[in-house]
Image 1: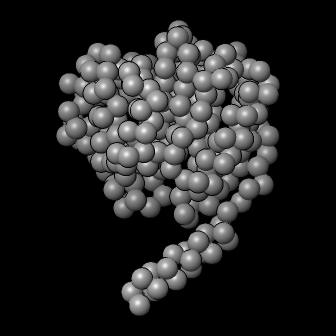
Image 2: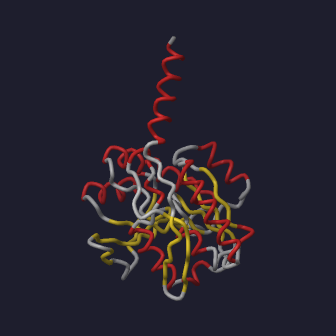
Image 3: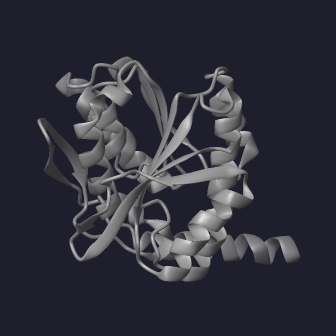
Length: 247
């Protein structure tokens, strides 16, 4: 009886989720320095059922502007992006790096992410078009992370993330940050100290979250450095880029 009730609850959630899904994507142009990207995204998305990855957030704009000005740091690198959403950051990086794995945990978001990867492969704009893939990765999920690392035994040169814990529901964000840094720490330790770093495009939305990001990183044995000159205002929100490494 208990199993039946659980299955009924799961079916109800799935049915309810379908009311929030909007897949009316528009081909949108983004310009970062000399790089022009076209990709499918929404102009707004539901905050229910974690569908925020269907549009481009300010943190991605902040990080992409930085990366476009410092593209030499991407040259020849293997990269993994956490919380890729529609893929605006990963696809920009694909024009410079050796390979990139774009990840997200939401199945609906993964659909549009894969479409955008195929779109840019057809455009022929990515130097690493044969080495740009999308994988499912829930933070804290060791099985999914190990599966990715099984295809990349040497780990990655660079980890990227932008606006990857949107403050929609505070308790969700607070629960996700420890899991994020659990995943980041494991990725960093594959290469070891000074061999890999996590570049985070961070947008400030609440002081409690600002403090929690730094404190959780420290709890996981990580060192957080603000990249000089990276502070800026995107829309009406302040943002900064962090360089995060093993202590």
